[in-house]
Length: 569
Ligand code: FES
Image (cartoon, rainbow, N blue to C red; front, side, top):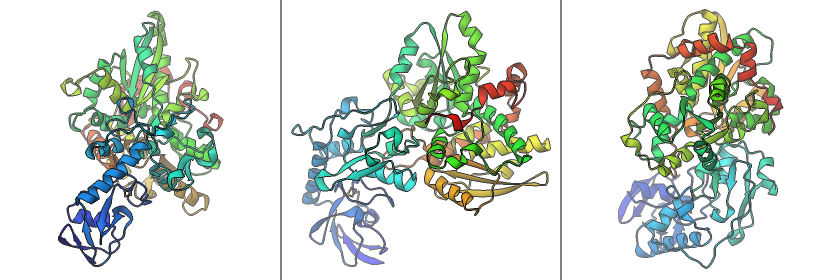
């Protein structure tokens, strides 16, 4: 321990602490911008300045030393921070009124706190960017904090972004000057959620959805992913306990969609198909392990960085693609009779799904399964545009029959949830009886551990499973499998840390990782559900009776399965 004096208070701090941490112990509130704990301490923004032994230093990357005397709130310290915020604003094109990050921009919040007025002497030009790729970069809003570089390289192991030059000439760019679609980007969107400004965003598809809502010849169908229910209220001022699935269904109706379905229904369908595929796989001599396939960020990552594993992915489409295929094929006659065409919108916690819905190899004879994907942020923006008071909405049910689901489907939204749901049904398919929930439990899986493993005894057969989330963790697991260090039968991968609850399309709160909090919400919904096994969903059973016959049938293959090796990237 070392002894310091911070703002006149005597403080003891561990010698491996930064001044920023030690100031926290003293109760001082220091602003930060570029700093990400353990990931980015390059001290480029200088808004965390403090005076230490008579000199101004960046507190985020200065180590504590015995005897330091620190001032955090002296007028000259605050003035120096303000000057640095002013400099950042001068290198940032401001169009705050129209910027999608206007309410969550960390730079704008600092400019407001420090009373920095707009400066007109230097406004960078907006550079051209190919908007056919759903990850958009506006270099004129980049403040060179390098948070995207750190997140992409150190957490997601994709290294899409790099910097060139130094000092005032420093620039952030796609690696090697490549076009973004050729740079190995998995489209996880984590660079977006860790960008403090509007320099990185997901392509906005709300105008496309508005056109469909305005077209009298279109039947608009919307569906919502499991993880959205845990986060949608964050962007529209609805408390977590009030942001129920029923209130979300009402919010979607208020936007004018003709039919409002829950992708959870198709998550149950995914389990029926993928669980049956796994049972067949276990009695085959195919190379181990089989991987889940419901995360398109993971599928892209495998195709771009570990193509040797793509052939081991489950052939099941992701749940929203399945829901879209079922909607378009089962409602085709009803739409035709009404003289309309069906337009399916998915509200997703994800950026990669914007790419996935346009993969031509996923279409059925009814065309694309899904016509547009909105992130949760876009959904929340539409709710604001329509001026819907979400707190005042009554709860309503999803439309039937493609809206009923089980608790097993709800936990798809967190790391380990797909595996847990699959095991609940796979064990039933093998033994004829339901396992107890603790046997399938994966709640110990966290973003911090590279992966978790577990061995189950299923009717005398050992089944070895693993769960990983975050692409850095995924890379470590794949390397271990390739090196023969782990022996597995079934592996769940989610591209985003914590799973879809931490998705790149979720609402953004600066420097807050909300995945665990949102996952707890999904677990509570699962526990409260009267239906908790996908194979007990009565509407899924009716879908098989009426349309699909049985899991892995010919029609199931036509509508619900794909070969990821053929996908265009
Ligand atoms: Fe310390 Fe940016 S937060 S220099």
